[in-house]
Length: 264
Image (cartoon, rainbow, N blue to C red; front, top):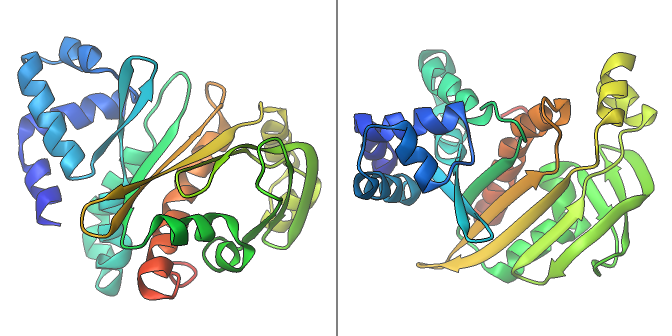
């Protein structure tokens, strides 16, 4: 984690993170316009932040959008600090939450993590029920062909809806599907009140996309983009808190053979 702390030590790089925390998904031009830094300096600082995993990028046409990535801080908190005294490192927990809770007009959750595994094993972990139930308590029943319906088993609640479909499925490289429907059974399982269920059910259907890329040193880069939310989305806030734990448990399962304990 030395590269993470080194990246955070520079005030200019912290200013870039502050800018993204205020408005995520900015282009290089937008970041330069909001800071008193030359374009070349901003590019160099962004490269350091990307190398440390604190910033991740997503292509939109010819533009490259920059997003805060909570993975490094989350992994410090959950895979190292959790062994010691959590109360003494609340500042790091607050930083993690700040990185996950940035306000924007069209919320988009973007998370990048690096896993010591192969693209084939990671694909299995994303698609096969014997894997997903271990780190996510969720099973997805489908043939994984584009356009095929999906039946979710989310913490023991079966959710079937014709609008739950596979959008893209390129084995070992890219997977995308629509999110599940919000049902009364799911609300009962998680203790949501009627108002919360109504807000969630009224939102447009979102989608999640997983991109798998081989990296150096027998490491695979996994980027998760969850988007399609409306401004002020309640679901966006919920998945922003939920995905980091799910993906940390996925990483731990693939690297150690066991997922993170529940509640960690």
